[in-house]
Length: 396
Image (cartoon, rainbow, N blue to C red; front, side):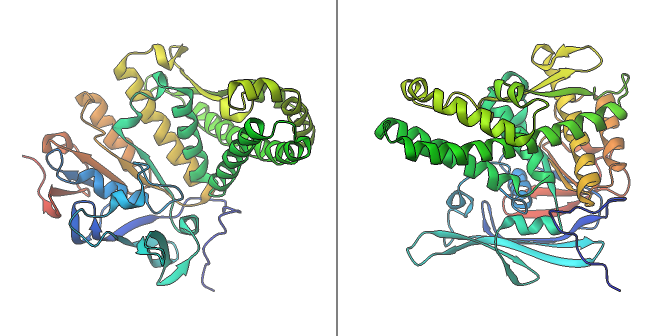
């Protein structure tokens, strides 16, 4: 009997299955007019000068998950400047169910705009969320280097990306919650006396708020438990102590979901005039924050050195990859942009050893070939030049 792919809503238990890109095709995507490359390795290093197109490859791979990819770019921005204005990305995956072909890209809609299209083995899929049956993707980019000192909004987006990798429906809930927030804010501004309309919006908003907060809390709880179970104070990538902070989380602590909905709905009704004066809804999971502490030092991550923050972030993303594997049954693709540039030789060697043992296929970028000299022998390297990937030998 042929083993069938798991339901995204009910991830399988047991050891995570393999998921490896064996072929990548790009058409009119960013700097690539036409690219077809075969890959057969657990670790893939893309080496080239700044602006050569290394991150473009990672961005293409990141489109095989719900959301807008690792750059959060508009669809039009991903099309090649000198192309037709549309693009396509395809991969062949080696999975526990055999080979599977995934494709995504854009087509011209009847109104002249762009429409996203997704396909699985040539059959149309409803949205990128359907890819979660076959592949999960996690990533780390230089844009996240300031995560711990950035805004709470930056950390909420990062947290929602962590949740989305284990719960593909989370993006739909977050989008619906944000739409409900905008609706309430607009009604408060334009029709503040329409209590029936506000009651209806706030009922929906309370239900969505509880669902979004619960998904975030479950992921953080699971991730924190995984990190603590494997913590090693001597590791070059220190373990992090995670929590979600906010007035909504304080209110929801140890209460049934129905009770939290009632409490939040009552709070929204009482806060209408204050929120109208502020021009936004002040209380709710949209005001929560992900807090991270350097575990061995018991220090807020924001107060650590730049190097410590980078090491802490790497450790967090690698732990998340292990959580995704444990919860989904799929070893995720791991995309690491410019990962080794600011690591000392000890941490670099430790990173490659950790990645080799992760069980995932890992794609990395870097400008200096010497940064990848310590990769395991089964890794592959590609020299990246504008529009091309060429197999490269290890650095001497």
